[in-house]
Image 1 (tube, rainbow, N blue to C red):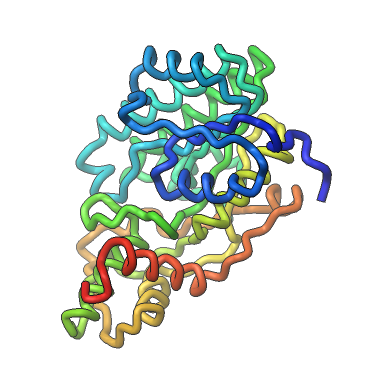
Image 2 (cartoon, one colour):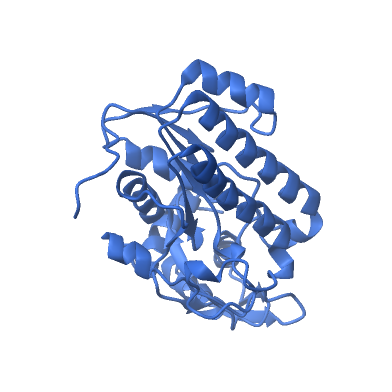
Length: 318
């Protein structure tokens, strides 16, 4: 592996969104980098308020910034809270990126989402597919905000020479996921439903959609490792996909979680509910060429995610 172009040893590194799944994984990963980790809770500043963000950044002056803060959720959350998804995420990224420029942050990494790509983008989705077609309607508000974040990083790089980069992770799961049936993502929702069915001895679990859409799933700890790798080794205008390069149907995912949880019932797929994008898998050739690959197989990652849910949310008895 090439020598780091931006070593983190001795740096002051700010993780925005440190309580979320991606942010908390980043904090754990950065503990071995010999850097000072800076975090800020909502009591310290509201990331949607420019004056508060600029004051905090001026007072703390980080050398590097990871933007993992966002208003997030699944299909239902996007459909019912479009204004929040667009406004909150635009404000968070704009305030952080602009204030990072103002205080002279040496390097910044903005964390996007694979939903930035067109609904019917050629598969696997390469970085150059951005803005080549219509977005998936079920999450376009979030996607538009994330695209704006990528473009902000590129704009500050072009106009000011700022070393601001962007990474696009695939569907994320793992430790610290958001367990909320109405606002969460598919992995967390299925873990909740399957665990509840196991505890109650139910014969079937209802799953939204047909079960046929294909998705790629990345373990939270792998994502954090990939982001730290990019911060240290990558400096370019193009965003970089971070994923596994492998995929599974939603039905396969449900079966995997059932095995991990020890649930022996079946599934009932509700085709009246939306499937979302038919297939979504990343082209990770650029990330692989840089020298990084994900290390956690899906089933092993699901074992860790399920154990975390039982220990921290549900409890052994549900």
